[in-house]
Length: 94
Image 1: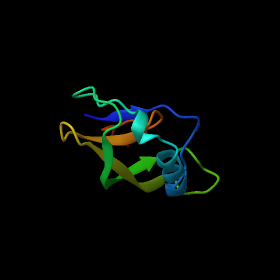
Image 2 (image 1 turned 60 degrees about the vertical axis):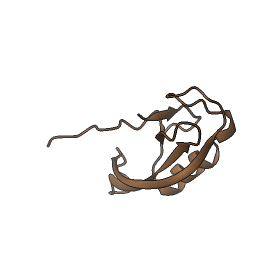
Image 3 (image 1 turned 120 degrees about the vertical axis):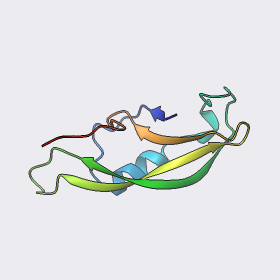
Image 4 (image 1 turned 180 degrees about the vertical axis):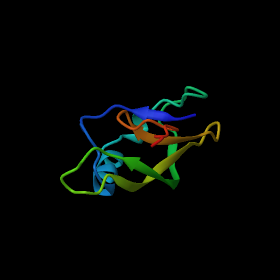
């Protein structure tokens, strides 16, 4: 199960933008979507994804970002911290 967080960023264009997004999240205010407990999340590793952006000025439209995982210490479920402008499991066919 994914945990999507709404934020003030319009677009995340690189790894630094994503890290700023993660740093802006207050883990103590998050509700676990599995057990509904509040504030019992810990950082729990990451995995890499490729994000396709529409930025023709830089010439690089395919970036790799390490997505932060968090774990609920109550029920042990894990969740990815994704901004709302990321579409998980989306694939583009060319």
